[in-house]
Image 1 (tube, rainbow, N blue to C red):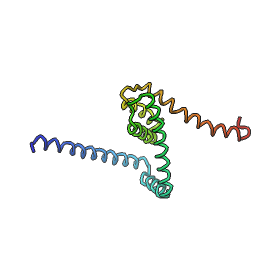
Image 2 (cartoon, rainbow, N blue to C red):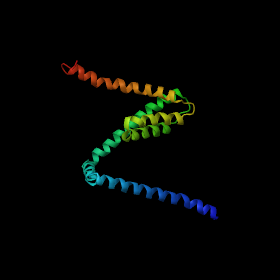
Image 3 (cartoon, rainbow, N blue to C red):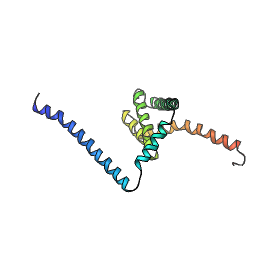
Image 4 (tube, rainbow, N blue to C red):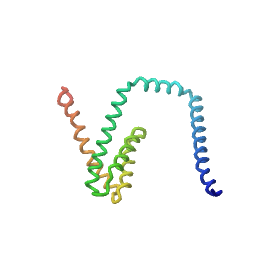
Length: 164
């Protein structure tokens, strides 16, 4: 083993450790600042943990299965639309991964920024796709949700007296 390869192998590990230490210091700083401002982070985390442990395993498994089914079905809708628009260029796993990442990002980012990331990802993984083309596919994909979403409002307006 040469000295160059030994040094190259050690550098990423030192860099990774340095990154972990920096993040730990930042977290300690944020926690200290929060404590100085009077925020009870430990109490909040305890409340979150208590809430999470109160959820039954059956409910948790059911919710995970339903959300997985919803994500997969919507990703399949995207796949079908894109496969028609870009024949031979669309791969199922790319669309599923992009849509699943979008769902996850929409859970933590404001203003549905995960959807914007989805449009950008799809325009990058499909060779001849443009952002405008993917945006057009987004409009087609949203038609179903707009039509289905209208039914509860229609039902409520027709069944609740005086709602018009």
